[in-house]
Image (cartoon, rainbow, N blue to C red):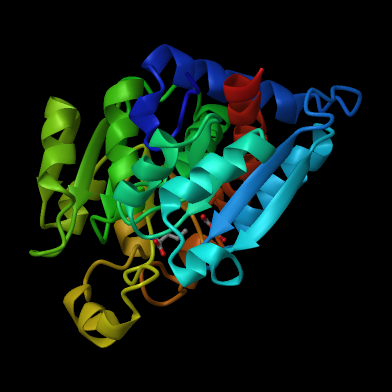
Length: 297
Ligand code: CP
Ligand code: NVA
């Protein structure tokens, strides 16, 4: 049975730590002679835009001697309503792993249920687990083990937030989440995380004494029609220098990107000394190489 990675909790905490450790090693000492994926192909299905996810998977497969196949869903028969189960059956007879970025976690599950090879979530409406492997790697690299520390999520209780919630319980840190009313994260995901997670409406309270402050766009892909309302509803949730001053003096700032300067984060914070966003983005490469190695080797 293939192992899939549709949610961070599809790995045990020990496995996730192993993948993050391996990602750190790959980054610290890149070994171009290590080519475990010669002759192997990753199919990458996208129904949504991407810069980092596409490039990091494609570059990662190339570094490991393999090949990545970019499939824009609209240019495949998925765009003409071929069942996702049939797509999975066929792709998994030709390829060694499948990555999918789409809306629906349920469709990803259907893909996995019909696939002989590992299926990886490259973002759904509910989760973005690959992002968290990279983010955790980044936190370890900049400040050491997150266990016992506190992170503050400011803004929308969205897909990336859900994966941060999973990370908190798996890596033993506290996650304070500040959202406007009506934008809280999924109640079941929060419940599963137990005492690791605390919800509150006040951004300053969430940031108080935090080791890490993280945010994301207020309007995720697919929500563009709500942009105007969201801009109004999220007023007061911008991560600016006043909010960062509430956190620890050595707190780091993270954002999965793409960012909107002047909305969820001010330019002086995201482009300032506490920001680790480009290391975080780079780690998508190393973390997914480590993940692919874990799932395929
Ligand atoms: N953070 C992230 O997933 O970026 P892309 O949308 O560019 O892939
Ligand atoms: N929450 C964002 C993340 C983009 C990487 C979105 O879903 O659009």
